[in-house]
Amino acid sequence: MKRFVIIPLMMFTIICIAQKKKNGTVFIEHPAIDAVESMMSAMVNGDAEAAAPFLAEKFTYYNGNNSNPDYKGTPRENFLKWTDWYKENLSYTSIARQPGAYPDALVYKDGTIWVQTWDVVTGMHNETGVKMDRPTHCLFSLNKDNKILVMIEYTSDPWDDIRESSVARKNGTLYNSHDNINTVRKMMMAIEHSDLDKAYGYFIEKARFRNINKPRGEFATLEEDRAGLEKMLETFSIDSFDVVGYPDYLEYEINSSKVVMSWWNLRLTHKADKKKIVLPAMYVHYFNDEGEIISETGYYSMKLFEDQLKEPQVAQN
Image (cartoon, rainbow, N blue to C red):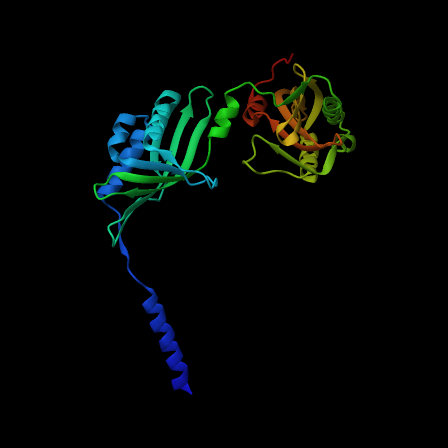
């Protein structure tokens, strides 16, 4: 019985071994890698003259993300014109290997050479200020003279942002008077008068709260935010919340966001020593279509707040 079990296992092992077939060698150092990295550096720096000697006469560039079945790639002449475009339109350009990555040169038995790279290309578009920060993976086919025949690039596309930023384009409507502005004012006045039931009634039950002093991505629930405010009111009394300037309400076309931005002087009194505190603050409130607040972000300096507590009492305007 055991003999019949062992025989199939041996046959499976033999089949697996037979399926392995070496077809070339992978190099971590190779003249083809040097040629590719030199060409890419010249391209990113906008130096078409320096890039040209590394390209074969029948060189073709392909965008690996292009799914058009009729796409024929970009010939050598147009690729070099594109390189000139880099020089004329981009600043602060650089290219570096992605952290932890390095290029490979694959030399096949038939003499075919391919190089694969993983890089990060950075820069700034001069006209729009759009930042380019593009992780990019490239495949290069080279001939026996280490001239690049084919370049296939897989990368993110910053060009949509550049095109959209090249012309003036509205992204919604700005209001200085709106029901959502009224909601924010009423909410802040309710807090000023310690009417927390009314104040938090303007928020949805699952509203999220954060301020600039919290770690990025950390939010409080409505219950947690109210508990924190109630604890603060044990130590401080509210003198007044005064609007600075006027709030803005923005209805964005992108993502259909509805946002009220408002600026305040929060005037408080420290109950223990009657010290007066004035804390400048900015609030950003996001609304749903029903006019309810779905999130709040507060921008204020806790250091300024703490420094005022430490300072000798001075008259406040």
